[in-house]
Image 1 (cartoon, rainbow, N blue to C red):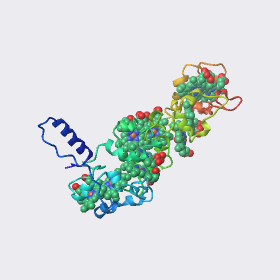
Image 2: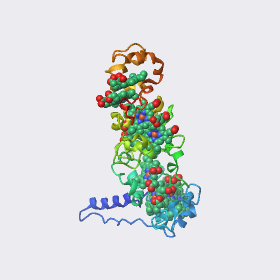
Image 3: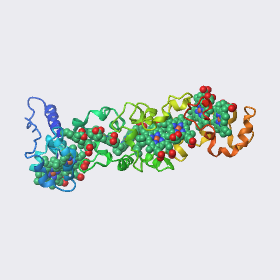
Image 4: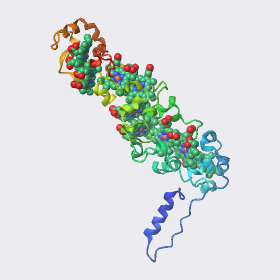
Length: 314
Ligand code: HEC
Ligand code: HEC
Ligand code: HEC
Ligand code: HEC
Ligand code: HEC
Ligand code: HEC
Ligand code: HEC
Ligand code: HEC
Ligand code: HEC
Ligand code: HEC
């Protein structure tokens, strides 16, 4: 029985309305949920165990902070009015975050957002996670000394519970050092919502990458257009079986856009290639160089500042 949950109260009111009519039986007025007396100490009389009490060592239990739950209604700042639960265990607290009786995600999130709506959570409403009924406590754990999702080394595990594809990606040969704990998902994403695509922290992919790879930002005397457009034209963010997080092996990568002109066609055959006279000879004699493909010569692939860098070879 959850007779004192908010929905219970609303339900009773709705029933009272729909009963309507002069002859309708007088409904018992719905009782407002009552708060327990005595604050957290009351709850801890029965709940002072390892599942619950680690919260006492977190910022949520700072009594001196008027913004914190313990500076307000204590446990009931989150679990809602629970006076009836104290009176009889068969009555559940108003808001449950876990287990088969867990409140709907929206009700749980409302509690957390009542204190955390601003800042990084500005774009929560309408975000991919909110729209898919994710709850704050799908990622956050409150009754632990240190929430694992806030720790670089353990964060990704939380995300992987739902994002299995990214788990397999970060185990590929070339990867951002996520499982090594040097880069966190939240270095690139804001899981609470974003004004950019794919929950990225910045408005574009490139702005996100420049946060750490600032040298790629330019401006450069000779820009390579696809680099300015989107790093994802050649890279993949989480992991790749090609070196350097490349989306494809080098010649094919380039040939997607440069297939029809000059020496760059079909370089692996080692055959004389149709194209500029003189240059093809250079390609053949440099055949061994193709182990690394086009970037062996076009080494400044992200653009160049050299006066003679128009071909990104220097
Ligand atoms: C007299 C002992 C006692 C007090 C006081 C008490 N509880 Fe409980 N509480 C229990 C017991 C026993 C259970 C387990 C009941 C069950 O499993 O059905 C429980 C369960 C819970 C649950 C989990 C419910 C579920 O179904 O998952 C929450 C949350 C909870 N209590 C919060 C509180 C809060 C908040 C307070 C203080 C306002 C409080 N309790 C005070 C004994 C108490
Ligand atoms: C009554 C207000 C209040 C409520 C309700 C509340 N919080 Fe907090 N929370 C705070 C305050 C105050 C802090 C400490 C200052 C800060 O980091 O903003 C905090 C800190 C945090 C932190 C950072 C913890 C750390 O170790 O740095 C997380 C994560 C968090 N809250 C998540 C939640 C979640 C999830 C919920 C809902 C289950 C929730 N909060 C409900 C007030 C609240
Ligand atoms: C998809 C996972 C996920 C969900 C869902 C989620 N969070 Fe977070 N939250 C994180 C991660 C990851 C961080 C660490 C961010 C960082 O390090 O930049 C974080 C950080 C925080 C912080 C502390 C740091 C700060 O920004 O001040 C608070 C408070 C917080 N979240 C509240 C919430 C609330 C409230 C909700 C529900 C509306 C929520 N979170 C939902 C993953 C999540
Ligand atoms: C900041 C919000 C918040 C505060 C304050 C809070 N809780 Fe919770 N409680 C949660 C969330 C979220 C969960 C789900 C498990 C988790 O995140 O650790 C939970 C789970 C529980 C459970 C179920 C435990 C389980 O693992 O099944 C009990 C019992 C409980 N809380 C009791 C309390 C008591 C007692 C207090 C006060 C001492 C309290 N809570 C304070 C948010 C809160
Ligand atoms: C409870 C399950 C769950 C957890 C945990 C979770 N996510 Fe999600 N996430 C989803 C769902 C569902 C979607 C929307 C559907 C989709 O695009 O896969 C989503 C969408 C996303 C997207 C946007 C995808 C797009 O195409 O726009 C990103 C980025 C993301 N999550 C990152 C994270 C990160 C980072 C974490 C850990 C901090 C995390 N998620 C934890 C369920 C989860
Ligand atoms: C180095 C930055 C970076 C890190 C770290 C990162 N991501 Fe991403 N993520 C991106 C970019 C960029 C995209 C968009 C890719 C695109 O547009 O093709 C993306 C896309 C996604 C998507 C949407 C699906 C897709 O492939 O388009 C999900 C889900 C996601 N990331 C989850 C995660 C999770 C979970 C983690 C942590 C394990 C994580 N990301 C770490 C940059 C990053
Ligand atoms: C939070 C910082 C951070 C952000 C943001 C970031 N990176 Fe990285 N990146 C790293 C680190 C750290 C390494 C590993 C460097 C090392 O091992 O020397 C790395 C390595 C790489 C590598 C080389 C991988 C290899 O196998 O050698 C590429 C390519 C790369 N990043 C591309 C990107 C792209 C594209 C983006 C934007 C989607 C991006 N990075 C965003 C920190 C970041
Ligand atoms: C036209 C394809 C292409 C685009 C677009 C591209 N890269 Fe690269 N990137 C490469 C290639 C090829 C390599 C490997 C170079 C090598 O092995 O010498 C590389 C290597 C890297 C490396 C590791 C070596 C180094 O130079 O530090 C980082 C980091 C990197 N790219 C970041 C980025 C970022 C950030 C963007 C977007 C601003 C981006 N790349 C856009 C092709 C591209
Ligand atoms: C997503 C498409 C795309 C990819 C992938 C790509 N490029 Fe480009 N590249 C361009 C465009 C567009 C230009 C500008 C062409 C122009 O100005 O006529 C360009 C210019 C160049 C130039 C300068 C010569 C010129 O015509 O301006 C060289 C050299 C070059 N690319 C080499 C490469 C190499 C090597 C790779 C593979 C590592 C590569 N490109 C991958 C689109 C691409
Ligand atoms: C042996 C060195 C070398 C290799 C390997 C090489 N290039 Fe070049 N490439 C050059 C030089 C030098 C130029 C300058 C133009 C000239 O001298 O004709 C050039 C010019 C270009 C141009 C601009 C002129 C044109 O023909 O359109 C593109 C695009 C290009 N290379 C792409 C590629 C691609 C793609 C590959 C790999 C499949 C590749 N290159 C492999 C040395 C090389």
